[in-house]
Image (cartoon, rainbow, N blue to C red; front, side, top):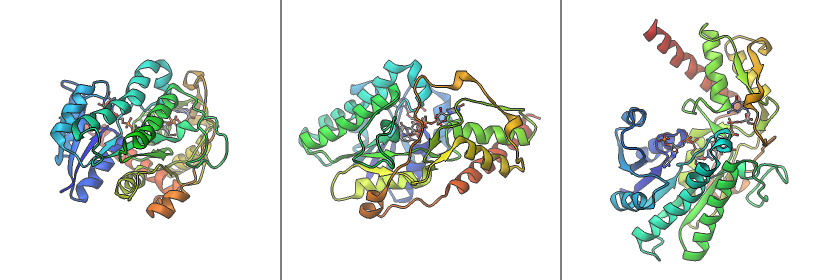
Length: 330
Ligand code: NAP
Ligand code: G4F
């Protein structure tokens, strides 16, 4: 059986990837941080096939130990401080975990696997945030980076150090430049889930309004379940290469609100949405649109869930979750 170690196992993508690899017969190991975290234990309960291994991307020796224990054929580095707004107020932490954490994991692989052993395949979770103030549209693997947040800057370092270790030490190390991807497991701090959760609660009479920041930004939103398939395909390819993963469509937050509210029968959402400058960022990424032609041609990857299906799936899930919670408490 192939063996995989996933960092960020408790996050949205970690959960989807763990399920995918389990369905393919992998032994799945998940890096978990902290000495006793009930939230993590709660998430892992849903994935009894995942073998937890203790470790933190801030601590090289813990990563060396985790690789030694898991003896993985593949490492998926999904762990990060991933919330862009938080990265502005926690810039050093973000640089440490989302940037230097990549270097530590690459070094841990070399230390355990042997300095010239390229047998462990490494996936780095790069991001469309690296394009930031975009230099061209759509963005491809060749588009120059111009990050607009401490998170984007940290990820640019992670991206280049992955490329550098591939070129310097012949490692099978590659990066997926993934555009925004969402789903029912998305954290409540991100705009899509914040909206679908609030829409469900408004429909159920549990909340009156949603307070948001910039409604004009546009994103290329896909479904997380489709995107983890691309991660796996990259590590099965003959050569380590970087790939853009995106739908190629861009939509505004206005459009997301239109579909989400329509799903619960509300045509005019204006009375339910308030804007507050506290949700504006010091620098914004206005619009992202990815070109995933390379992944389609080389890996045979295609997204399966459309934007409309994604919004519907998220609203339906939040209606179920919030109704169950209300029933439990009421
Ligand atoms: P997420 O839900 O925010 O999950 C982040 C994960 O990182 C959590 O499991 C978290 O663990 C873990 N983590 C945080 N600090 C850590 C540390 N010091 N050591 C080890 N693990 C740590 O993120 P996601 O949406 O699944 O995204 C997965 C990866 O893809 C991230 O690297 C993200 O930056 C990148 N990415 C995401 C998107 C997207 O649209 N979702 C797009 C492009 C790239 P705890 O639960 O213990 O905090
Ligand atoms: O949902 P967001 O916080 O996602 P963002 O900033 O695009 O980052 C996500 O996608 C990246 C890929 O490009 C990942 F690398 C990253 O880890 C993360 O998963 O914000 C989306 C847009 C922004 O323009 C933001 O300003 O929504 C705008 N927005 C407006 N009101 C809001 C809100 N964002 C949040 N989170 N909360 C609001 O109230």
